[in-house]
Amino acid sequence: MRMWLFLAALNGFGAVLAGAYGYHWLEVAEQGFRDVFMMGVDYHMWHALALLAVAWLASRGAGPVVVIAGWGFLTGILLFCGSLYALGLTGETVLPGAAPLGGFAFLLGWSALAWAALRGR
Image (tube, rainbow, N blue to C red; front, top):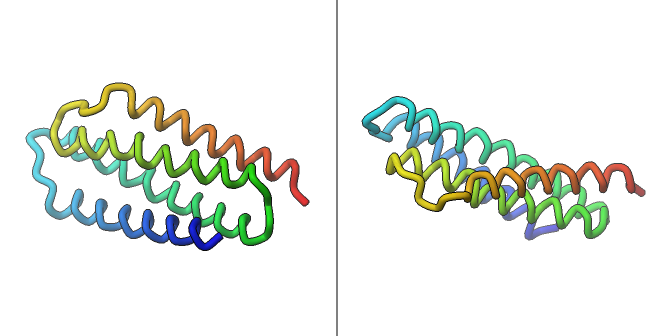
């Protein structure tokens, strides 16, 4: 539980920091790249909050399916948000296929969370 709470807090901090950077200091040639960067910030923050839910459910003994959800959210943040951050910063796709794979990881996380809700104790 403590690990998930730490990861939620770390990612919330990272999302706020990225948002501040993207809004105040990111200089890009085209506005579209700033929009891509800020979309990464949005997804990052929402999934940091999802990790907070994972931490809470883990503290209540929700079981291994919640851990799968947590890893799905964390993987999605790294791949999906990371690729949007990189595209926003460089204007180039740094790791082709990372965004769709990260999106799939988000879907896995939400599916696992739904499964945990249906199996709830």
